[in-house]
Length: 548
Image (cartoon, rainbow, N blue to C red; front, side):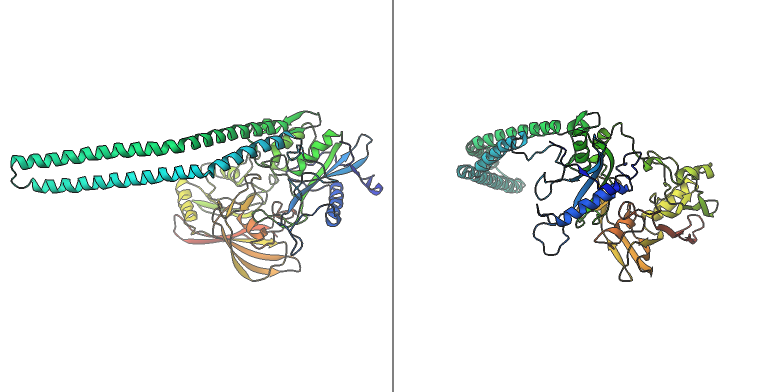
C-alpha cells in the first residue's frame, strides 16, 4: 500500500515547533499540530459525501445513532515533510475501510481472507444444526419421549400413592384382633402391591428407553455438529489472534494472542491509536504527536461530549501501545507524579480521638500503585502512635476538602458504622461548566467501573450499584453554575458522572479531566460534614470553604 494517506500540512505551519516527546496516550493536552489535524478531519466529517453514518447530530436522520472515536497522528515522512493520518475506531458506516482513513490492522471482512472462508464453513454447520433442530421426525420423537416420561411419572406416582394409602388402612386393621388367615391376607396384599410397582417401573423404563432410542440418533448428530463448530470456532479465534499483529518502530510484530495471552477483550486492536501507529510504522512514517476525539451523540452509558478530546482506553489499548511505542520517548506519565507533594495537609479540627483535615486537590487519600504520598501516609507521620487504619473514608484524588481521621481502631469502627448506616451527612460545592435550569433535584443513576477504561465509571442499569445525589443551585454566571451536591451514596466518581452524564445534569464539573474539559484543577470540594462524635456523642458539623 502506498503512503497516499499521508496528508501534508499547509505551508503556513511548516515552521511550527515540534514536540520533543511523543504524546503520552492515556493523559494529554493535544499538541497544536494535533489540533490542526483534528480540525481538518472534523471539517471532512461535516462535508464528505462518500459514506453515510448517523452520528446522532441531526434530528430525524435515518439509521441507528452511533457516535464514534476518531484519531489523528502527526507524522514525518522520509523527506522530513510534516503531515498527518486519520483513523476511526471500529467500523464506520458498516465498513473497515474508507478513503482518507488508515485501514484496520487486520481486515476480517476481506473476501479473500481466512476469516471469511472459515465463516462460510461455520455458517454451513450452523445451517445443518438449524435443519436438524427443526426436523419434523426429531420433534415427533421428542414429543413422544416427553409424553412417555410424563405418563410413567404419573402412573408410578399414583401406584405409590395407592400403596401408601393401603398401608395406612392395613395398619388400622392390625390394631384389631385378626385371625391368622386375615393377617396372611394383609401381608399378601402388601407383597402384591410391591410386585406391581416393580413391574410398572420396569415396564415404563422399557417404554422410556424405546422412546429415547428414537431421539438418540438426532441428538448424536447435533452433539457432533456442535462439537465440530466449537473446535472450528476455537481454531478460527486462535488463528485470528495470531494474524492480528502490530508493528513497532523496530518493525517487530506482536500478535493479539501474545499481548493478551490469547484472551483479548472484545474490540481490542480496533481503536484509532493502534491503527494509526501500525500504518505509520508500515510506511516509515515517524510519529510526532497524537490525539483522539469523540464525534456524535454520547452513548447511554459513557460520558462522551461531541468534539471533545479523550485519552486512549486502558483496557484494550494500553497493552497494545506498550509494545507499539517501545523505544519512543513519551511525555511524562502524570500518574507517576505526585502533584501535591509540596502542599501542606491542613488540620481543621482535632481532639484526642479524631481529626478532620482539608485534603488538597491532586493528593491521594491512600497510597496508589505509583504514588505513595497520600493523606493516609501523612496522617501516619502526624499521629505515629495512632492505631487502626486512620483514614475513615476517601475522596477522589482530584477532589479537595474534608476527610475524617480516626486515632484509634475503636473510633475508626464507630465512624465506619455511621458511614455504613448513611447517618453521616456531607455537602460538596462544585462549579459546573454550563448554566443549569431549575433550582434543585435528585439524580439516580447506578454506576459501575468501565472494565475497558479504569478508573472511569459507567451508568449501568443491569450491573451498576445504586447511586443517588441531591443537588441545589447556589448561583449562576453567564457561563457557569455553582451548586451544592449532597451524596446519599458514596460511589467512585459519583458526583463527577452525575454532573456530566446526559441523564444527569449533562453539565460537567469545571476542570474534570475524565468527564469534561481539563483546567488547572477539578472544581469540586467537600465543604462540610456532619457526624456524631463516637466518644462524646455530640453532633458535630465541620466546615471548610472551597478555594474556588
